[in-house]
Length: 177
Image (cartoon, rainbow, N blue to C red):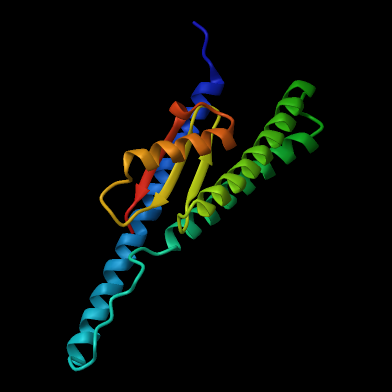
C-alpha cells in the first residue's frame, strides 16, 4: 500500500484553512452580537435619535482577520522550513524538499494576491483566495442568499486562469457578514 503524503498534506491543509475560516467567522458573529446588544441598550436610552442603516451590510474585518491569520500561519511554516535548511543535521534530500516547499509557498502567496486583486477589480468589495495544490477556494462577500450561477461560473473561470488550475477545482464560498 502506497501512501501519498502530498495528498494527505493538501487535504489536511484545506481542512485546517476551512476550520480557521469557520472559527474567524464565528468569532466575528459573536463580536457582532455583543456590539448589537450594547447598541440596543444605548438606543433604548436615546429613543429620539434617528437610526441610520449602514449602506454596507458586511464588515471587511472577516477578510482582514483571515489575511492576518494566513500570514501568521505561513510565517510559522516559513520559519520551520528555514530552520530545516539551516540545520546541519538534516539530510540533503530533506533540505531540497524544504527549499522546494518555500518556493511553493511564495508562488502561492503571489498567485493569491494577484487573484484577490483581479476579483476586487471585477467589482467585489473584498475577497480571500486560498490556493492549494489540489484545489483553490475563493471567499467573497455577498448581500443576497447566494451568488448568481453565471457570476459564479465567470468567477471560477477567471480564478482558474490566474491560479493555473481547471475551473472544476475552484470552489466559491459566499460570506454573509
